[in-house]
Length: 248
Image (cartoon, rainbow, N blue to C red; front, top):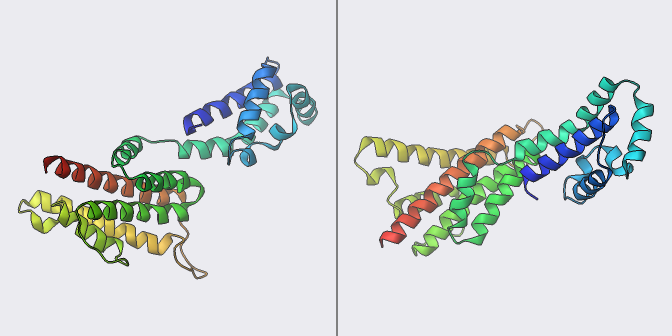
């Protein structure tokens, strides 16, 4: 079940319970089906309100809610508040404009490991910011290594991301010093800076190194930035590689 489907089902469950708790009607069969689907979904069950797990049908839910609150607005506020953390999380994880294009470009690359790394980064960006930042760098490293392998360009086993990117960019004619036009030199130089920045933020904020007591802790927005930048750069490299391979 994708994120949009999950959001739709959680909202349907919430709306049904709000209606039932405030004098409206709800489909008992639909409630049971939604409850079972969401409780069976990995990572979702523990974020659902506790009463979803304990109330197996609408009758049990009514017994809980009528004794807990006497007024409709109190019931609405309570139910909205109980579902809000899960819905906020799912909405942050939902695909955003541009990310589907990245996934499509990586899937056409023909390297299953690249696709796997990208999906891990998407999954982690809200729930595990430190892990997502680590995976964002791994994504670029994986793309660079696949391109270099196909181009039969040798690289050291312990080569870091900036070195891998420099070799890849040179192989694809994307290094700034391979162009004379200032605008291209500036754009390609910016790409190199992005890669350098991803390496730096990974070392500073990710979970790849031990940390002291005052270490900076990344938030979801830091992970979002790292994953989006890594996805954009990976897509640029994959598409450039495809163009050169098609022209060969």
